[in-house]
Structures are given as structure tokens and as C-alpha cells.
Length: 124
Image (spheres, rainbow, N blue to C red):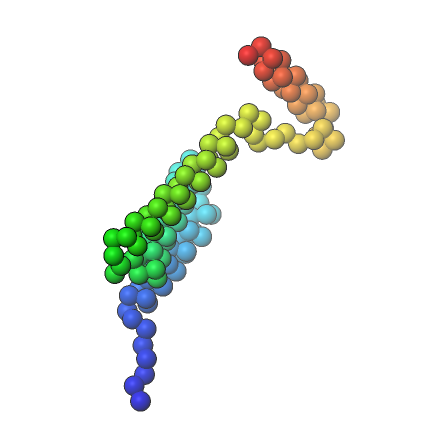
């Protein structure tokens, strides 16, 4: 009886995904500053492209299937863009801890900052 072996493309995709996972974990512990998020997103995009090309078999499909897959990725990009816009336009982020969790001088500074922010918001 002939033994079944998985196609080599699937094994290569599995190894690539595991390597990218290891790279993601290794870079999570490195201090990269502002480059941390773009590098992590680039790795995640590479993983998504490997899954789409190999496991979804988009490389062997017709143009209509590829167009619908691209529309799905475009919609995902819109959702990520909206989430990033929401995150970046919040005026009080990161939030200050509640006054009970701070020492007395920190509490006075936090209250002064809130008063200054609300006063500035009323002027605008």
C-alpha cells in the first residue's frame, strides 16, 4: 500500500508560519520603540499572505475568487484604519489613574491637568 505524504508546499508553508511566529515572539521582547508596531504588522501581513496563497489556494484560482479575497482584505484594511483613527484621536489617552490610587502630589497634578484640559476645551 502506498503511503500518503502531504504536498511539499503545505510543509513549506507550515515551516514559514512557524518561523514567522518565532520571529514575532522574539521581536516582542526587543526594544524597538516606534518601529515595534510596523514590524509586527509587516510580519502579520506576511503570515496572512502565506495563508491566503497556500491554504486558501488562491494561487490556483480564477480572477473572480482572487477579487473577492482582495475585497475581504480591503475591508479588513478599512476596519484597521478606523480603529487606528479612533485610537489616535482620543484626547485623554492614556487615561490617568483614579485619584485614590495616587499619592497626594500626583493627585493635585492630575486634578490641575483635568481643569486645564476642560478650560482649554471650553475656549475652543
